[in-house]
Length: 534
Image 1: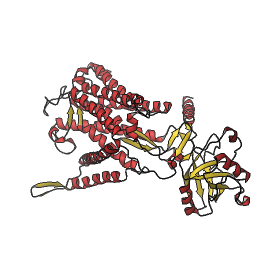
Image 2 (image 1 turned 60 degrees about the horizontal axis):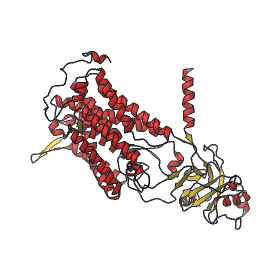
Image 3 (image 1 turned 90 degrees about the horizontal axis):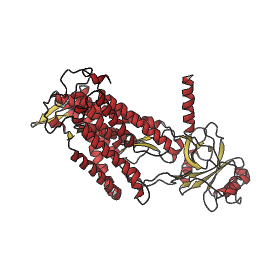
Image 4 (image 1 turned 60 degrees about the vertical axis):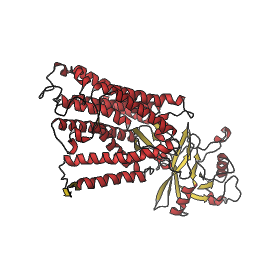
């Protein structure tokens, strides 16, 4: 019974998330070949079937030589019982549809060289039109003519778009994977450092290039620098975006090298070292560097190819986040609280407060993340606008993970739709996760209780973020939920275990050297303190 209730509840939620969009699909075939094209219709005026199987098949007639504002010049026998394609212009959509109906046309497609908009008419005209009506790109029709010739068969259908998309689950998996692996890597490096291991993924502190934040003043300066950089990006986006792209290519290639090098060290892959004139070289490192640089260069060259380049951007983004979590170390929980709290205020201010000060009412954070001249589909209420011609690529900052919305078939035909998650929503809580992982090493916790607890808190925070986003229909500043979840969870765990003093103070790298002892005695077990029963 309980299982049945859960299934019914899930079904209701899923069906309630279905949205009838104005984008639809024109399926053209000739018996051997088939292809889909983007069309825009008005669901409340001329609704279409939701599936390809349920859609009616029409012979498609080319009437692009006429505007169909009247019946002159049209052979009724040629179009009787068929779908026709006419050119846009000279008269309103409803007049074309009424003329088509008088000729016994079964479906009307209007080819356009202008942006595709949701068809509309005067209130008195809506009830008079009974045939499917949609706009398509003229260039798509020319392409279809080249592919299929004159024997075209067409189906029009509009699959519903679901708010609950599989891309959300993929994005959640990416975030959890990156957070968990980055925290684990940081803890492993700390254990190797304490044990005096050098080289590979666990090289000594002096040689690893790690940076340690132990001063509240440095944290405040770091956040102020981020605020200044964001404001500069807002005002000088067209110039600074290319600077950020170059920096990202260099940083992500280096990060990808570090990640792959650590994996090869883990599986025991030989380095193939050799010397030339007292200079040591590694065959493995040279090959790995070439591969990583090539991946970054490919992304840099094809960064505006939405159909597939998101895979490389996510790969480079994951490597960048992992390397950042390993390289930047927070020395104690106090620094974690200060940094995460300031970044929470930073996120909320630039998302929710800045729209009151900008000219277009768009937050500085959104404007910078999406780009001021981002081309693509525009939506306002139930109306959409789709470019009829290829748009000049609009440069976007490589600061987000991107996954296509898999259920948005019709929308992706018109303009690719993505679910996005900022790198900061992974890196900022990830620094706390990395600190928890290192603290587990310092206290010799075999169950990694701090690390596991913080990862679970991050997961719950991400789930709440996506839930609020789906319910509100608006993008959310993820740190608004992630920071309280992770900080409060870590504080509660430390308090319950009676280790708040050690957890708060952590370690200060400016006074402790690499030979320091763990915070708690060696060999301590997780049941050694009464508070650990919590």
